[in-house]
Image (cartoon, rainbow, N blue to C red; front, side, top):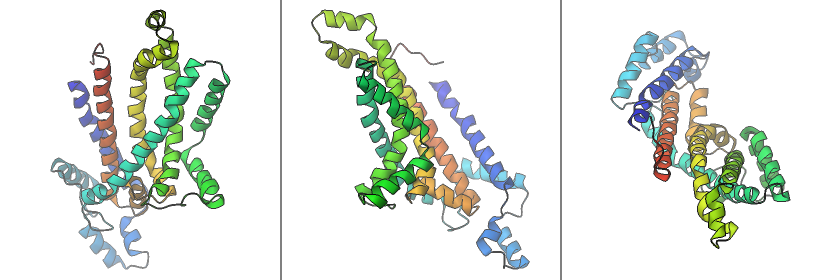
Length: 302
């Protein structure tokens, strides 16, 4: 487990380095975006010196790393607010959306995955497979507008966009949760089918326990172990995938903040958002490993 913790440092370092270089080499000048093309050269140079963009890129990179070592993510070019403060103010909305999406995925995946495994090759199994295929084949940038078109514009059941009530949360959570539900359902079905064929399930049934009880009490617990790994990876993907969904539904989270920062070429804010998402993803994966070890003590990590 200590080796897993030690791997966090190079991973995060690689992420922030790649993001830093990409931001500084892609077309677009934050000074021109902030002042507009009508600004005179003297104004541009003054703002560039103020933002320290006139310095060599190596010097900017070293200063950025020095700030990270002190826990300082810098100041936003656009709002002139500390980056850490802006990110933390948006994090509760992103966490709420990710948790709701995870809940949607589990409410769909667990019942359908168990039913599909217990009734293999039945109509329920085939319908579940069809739903899983649809969930995997529909990207968020297509599913989100489709849900808005059906449930907001035509039926008027939910708001088109915004934040503040449970009704605002439903469509974004469905958009992010459907794809995750499809993955978890297929994984749970496959894992549970393997456990059902094990001898201990037949032994429990032969001792008077019904087959359903034997599956739910014994086989299901063991089948959840490999699913947890996928669940942890997918929860990290929810944080990254929120960039698209939050933009579609105008959800005031870190994903939308990242898009706004990219549009404005707000280097410190983009770097801070990507770093925060990367750290959350690594932390979730580490927590998944700990839970994996907890459920199956026989597992030994390198």
